[in-house]
Image (cartoon, rainbow, N blue to C red; front, side, top):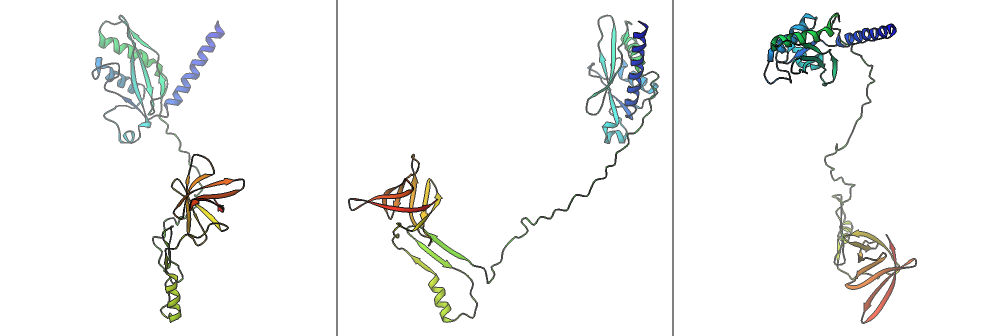
Length: 292
């Protein structure tokens, strides 16, 4: 039994020392003028008494609406006091709780009690009994030491993104306009020419501006490149000219074809692509060399 009592006392002394060191990290105790347990300010003079007993125990207690400048700029310098009212019909019971700036509970007192029938006296006695937890704590504020880290200088990153606003046309730059559709095959070279052009040069320049409306050439044998378009592809040769347009169907590797104004079908048979269309009442078939 004696050993058990000694262990309890040792634990209490150790806990008391730990709490003392923990509270020394805080410079102020902030006391609300109305605790959550009451509907009006300073009910039964509870706020006045809590602030008074903190001051008696060596703490720098301030009201929440009259805070020093350093505390107003950094609420983590102080702990906020709260009064828990666990009173019953015949007994007034109070506990003082201290919370940090993150609303974490840092310290809780024992439950103070009073059987006085007069409320002001009962709360004074209960609060005073709760403050027995602070007796002989020998509180003294000790600022936390700031840890200075040797930070390596971050490497300088240079970005030239969006640095070029415009690109001027230089004599060696090329400006080409072209159109490749079944109806129009247009190619224009707008490359700036030197002012010392000869007549031959001018003739060559005029020859580059070609606008034709020729029938589509035969697709068989030549390599056709498939360019994606809405709901299908358009097949162009190396000119480039649009030879035909393919429309997707619900079956893989089968397309509806628009070839030289004729409706047909392009499908894959083995490793070959075949074009079938009707011309003069007869079914025509051609092998296509398509690169998708």
